[in-house]
Length: 439
Image 1 (tube, rainbow, N blue to C red):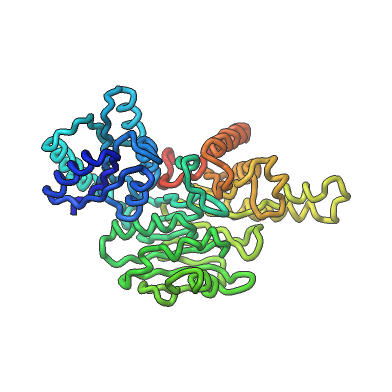
Image 2: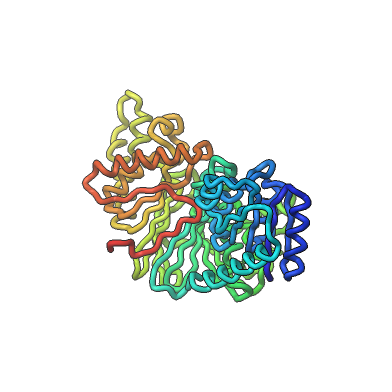
């Protein structure tokens, strides 16, 4: 079905466009402001969005930017309309991601024809770029990059505000790393992609802190009985994995219990530190974070990815704890040896996704919280011969500008090391394929 969301605060224009499109077989949703428009988009996922640029609450420029920051709307067609004919406004709308700019007054016949052309082009592109489970390349996509708590809003649009969730495709497998709030968007995308076909996914949980599991109750594939969902992780410090995942869905916290989900869900407590998911080889290593927490290393014939979203390197914390006091016997050697174990775990990995929540000064105020700083992330990655490092688990108090400054600092550090390490910050929607360019 052809679906469209109209965001327009002029009731006459809104009624006119709705009638034009409904007569042509379109399903239409209406919004008189940008805030309601974004809510309707996330609820219904229309294939086309038409937005006026000057609308209340959230203006059209912000709507376009927000839509283009969400991976699940990559193929959504966006039409910007405006009664203003300034070239700068048109250019800005197109730069933010609008597919076309239409000046008011709108010609009904031409407008209907334009939308039909856009939807036809959308279908062709979707068919051409549909990800294949049999692809010869290993693919990683970020769906949630934030730590601690979701941080939606205009200041986190670029890097994203969802909590930890990363999708990996390799060897015919779909592997999901953690189920923070980002898994909701991933679930919607998978449901759209498979379009009723059975889905088989494996979810690897690093630990059961809320920001790494809170999205699972909203994972749409779990509500389809055709789907097979396997959840793997290690026993928690106080309760088992199944018990924790079930508890967060019990009344009064959630209206549907885990056992009531229609999907075929199997939860397995891992005992071994090495295992396979289909053809993908997986290694786990315990990391320095409160409770039972691991990092994962995934390898296929196409490359390798290491995922350590929560980890506090030992040596920097050891130095801060001393604070001028006499060092504990063997303390320094122990800290260095533990960090070296981590270096060996990530040795020569192609992609490293690693906790870099704080800058150096912030870390001094948060030592012992279980998270690291960018200086250590870069240093460990460089020592291990990592090809590309993604800074991850962004602090909820860091807006897009703060994260961008951290990236620049990290790149400066990497440039002084005897390495070819590439550094970036994890950003929702970003896709990386292996082998990397140049390999």
